[in-house]
Length: 119
Image 1 (tube, rainbow, N blue to C red):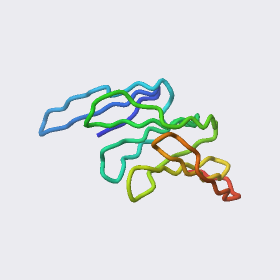
Image 2: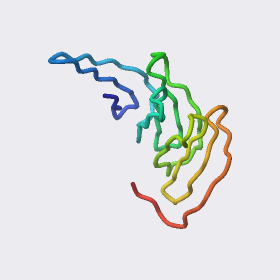
Image 3: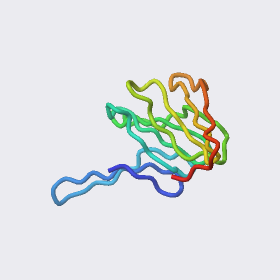
């Protein structure tokens, strides 16, 4: 089980039988608004409400790597575009859907829905 603390800490909670282990995986120092695994479960996107997207690779147990920084205070969520792990889509509260390259953080396209988005 992966979850985040309010301070921006990614935590892994491993449960086996009646025992458990807690491990701090990464500290990004920004509140994490959502977590999303890639389709092949090799990467985890960490999305902040400040418009920053990080990637964490559980198998490598390293630090979270900043992929995107949109500097949007109205950032809601991001997810992988399938197939593959090369692109992600994000959405803002104002209804702007954006597509990004995860290789270098390049903005590729956007679509304005014309409505305010919640969850």
